[in-house]
Length: 569
Image (tube, rainbow, N blue to C red; front, side, top):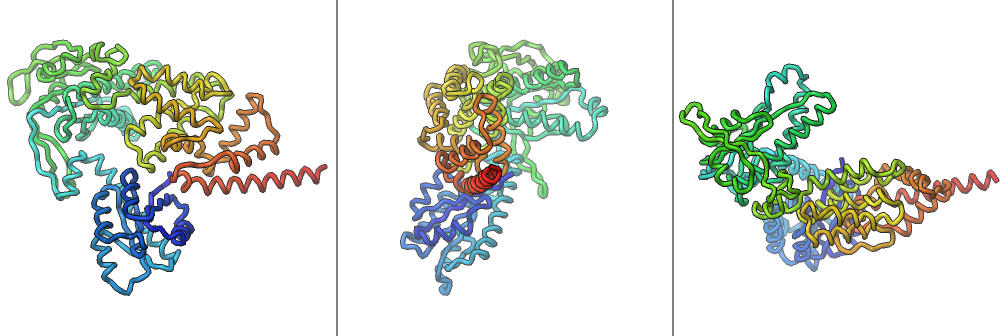
């Protein structure tokens, strides 16, 4: 897997830029140049920079105070800052730089080996920071991490109506005896990963897993609207996921797992415990009651309490299950089975997927991206002609993957990333219908399908223009179109270029465009050398060099082929 990092260089001198391009080019380094701190603000408004280099001797460098403000304003997007200077004799400037947030310096004239060595150290630290942040993000909620970073602690908090969701697999202890440990862990990981995605989609927070039990909360550390409704929708999607897995396993005559789910809301206390191994957790009778509701749930069913029923019955179909005893504290509680969404609040009137109206109410994504993605991938898998071996499902998934990578490094927001991924998934669907002018058919299919998943007219317009921009000879306009075009041709600069290109040659031959080896090389040389170009800064940094190498290799191979033909004749 490629390790990529944005390196922001604040220096208007072209001689410095050329030298740093030569020293730092490649190796996953994405070099971003600007003339001043003011321009750096504009870049950091969208992008993250793992390393910032600033020439403090530059005429355009305003002051250390402005540089310090830059790092403070964009603290979450800047990690390691290094000063470039010609004068290290007076320590006052360096000291001011370090006080402003810089961690190191490099001197001019540049020493390539020293610069590479220093930046390799900070790149390594940056990648470790990213990994640590990812691990901490899996352990602690976002606001807890913010408090820990800012204050070094997280004060316990109490909420009057937090929501607790519990799941537990049926007869797990018995099943675990007949499954090898590695398979058992992989199976749990598969289900819990799916639950994690559902929890994230509905803006809940995963608290922990205890054996085969999974616990999530809502309305405790986040202030998103309607935590009870969001928890109920998440519970329904978890249950339906398990039901679908069960039906598939039965059809294949394989073993399957079943689940029980319980949901309750009430007072909760949240906090961090531990002195060596920290753990975020919630406490209160609400947790026990949610667990009790789960225990009374039927197989592949969801049981909710009175408080959940009273605040969500207008949106969900429910069935009264009567009163059940509460262990330990005594007494009883009324429970209900959460069956489905009411049809008027379901996107497809099937009681499963929340409508746009309900999504807006709950402040979650208004489009059903996951179902759309699954449906369009299934169409590609089942409907693409067998002869389409380049523009196939694998190509679409590779383009989506490349688009995500480019989008993150180019600083896209969530909405832009959604539109980009959707365009990537649809951009080659036209090959289902025709080999020529496929973009037109892809757009028609997209326009037909997307409204039922909650996409609005403006989103569809943006996606349409992205798909059309992938047409040969069309110049992309704007960052989204440029990213999709670069993702579509990402392989041109990769090491697997020849493997991918051979599939294209075979595919063209299957559709009546059979070329000799010499004609194929000439076509590729013309495409790489004259017709194609990368547009985004990221693609130019990580793929242009590879593409240039492929072009040189093809030219050399063509000369050899032509020479052999002359000798043979």
